[in-house]
Length: 69
Image (cartoon, rainbow, N blue to C red; front, side, top):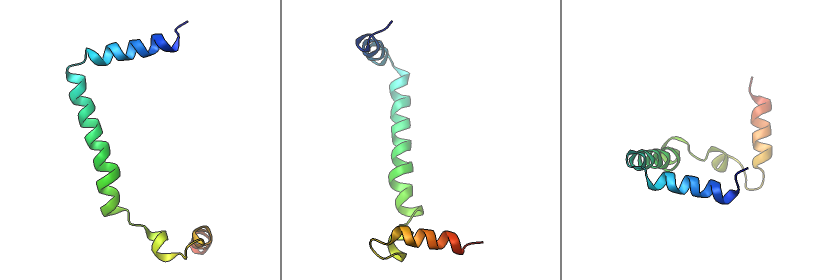
């Protein structure tokens, strides 16, 4: 059975030998940054924070769910 140290060495050596993989990881990280940082700011505003009183967010959401058809 592999120990945690063996698993760590396996991945460490694999990432050291990557050439194209590093570029692909960079692309993945840039995409994640764009999705979570930039798109959130422009397309997902804080609707509950603007419409609910502080501390009453749960009641606001429950009321909205009950009033929608």
